[in-house]
Length: 268
Ligand SMILES: Cc1cc2nc3c(=O)[nH]c(=O)nc-3n(C[C@H](O)[C@H](O)[C@H](O)COP(=O)(O)O)c2cc1C
Ligand code: SF4
Ligand code: SF4
Image (cartoon, rainbow, N blue to C red; front, side):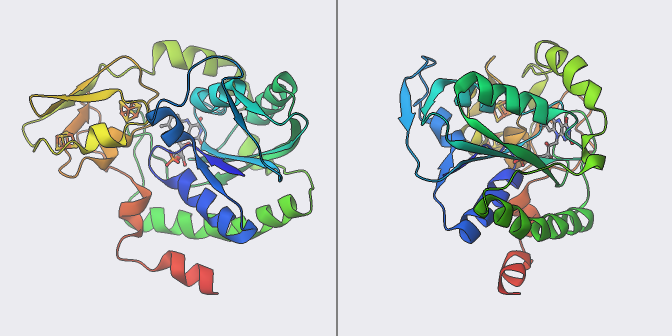
């Protein structure tokens, strides 16, 4: 079974490509949270799969996103089942593999390795995002990596990260613990006069952290900085402090619109 968490579509896209090749089922961790399946109680939900568990997610501060970690900690998985990790990233995953293995040991899954796929950077609250052309090129390269990953999983071999994508490994240990308490907050999000009250921001927030009041968004405290609200707003009416004003809103869907990249690659 393939589980994905995705803010702006990259990880969902990779999960879908893998599912096509492996003819495997997909499970959305976004929907799991959005629909309140998660009760926060250990052992509250059981998920049975005859094949390996494959987790596809973005990289947040050089590790698995905390929301994915919590999901794995709190769902009742079949013990000793193989678990594979595929992290999309803007540039590198550092020493994320160390923490994925530790998580598997903690919950009784059999760690089968982690690999990384570079995709367009989506973290516009902190970094510039690539333009359309650059994004397409990155997605094209990323797609080419998927068949080999699927083959490794099919052969029940270990996944590995390319050494150059493990750089800045120390940041997984040093920066990640500070990242959530000091950086991951919703208070800098605000709407501008462009807002048309469509509700898309509330619809796409996996944590139901955006609510419309008088047809305008308000942000609560349960934010994981996935960038979905700001990136999917159809009229670019959401800003993050002042830094986002000149930055492109990246989403995979917008980038793929008007291209037949997916179909071309699949039919090759
Ligand atoms: C909160 C946050 C933290 C991030 N941290 C990293 C990181 O440590 N290393 C990296 O290469 N990319 C990082 N990124 C970029 C994303 O991992 C990357 O763009 C990913 O493909 C987004 O996937 P998604 O569209 O499925 O959400 C970060 C993005 C966000 C939103
Ligand atoms: S998605 Fe944008 S336009 Fe729609 S309600 Fe949210 S801020 Fe307003
Ligand atoms: S408020 Fe926005 S950035 Fe925060 S979790 Fe929801 S969609 Fe993601």
